[in-house]
Length: 196
Image (cartoon, rainbow, N blue to C red):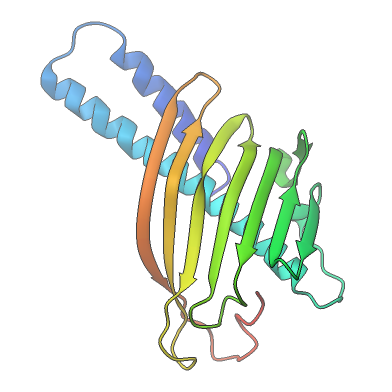
């Protein structure tokens, strides 16, 4: 989703809620409004989760770079700490720092993992601690489980979101729980997709 996706979704939710508070509407209009708000909330949540996944993945790649120089602009203002013994990676944005495209992030993303992601059965858990992006509070736990049966298969991941919640600066709240499967179809080049 494009960078502007979250901003458009936030604006649409605010407008929809403002319209809902004005005047008498028929039941059908109320139903249409609820559907529109639900759709916009879903779009905002999807945009935020996609951004979160990208940041977490950049940190995992950096942590597994094996001492080689690695830098990702998504992490340019964060402190990334890895504990290989505990199998954790912590991304700390502190009280707030401005990253790529002017996005302000604050708080911490804590990642725990059992193995490299391309190993069958590997689990990566992403938990948020006082995390905000552009003054939108983000809560939830995201769990990625590698469910492929053979190392020769395309990697398949079960992706769960528990307790997903966005809190906007005007007090509006959007929530989401999800559980789905994603298959990663890699290119013919064996080097593609091998980074963690």
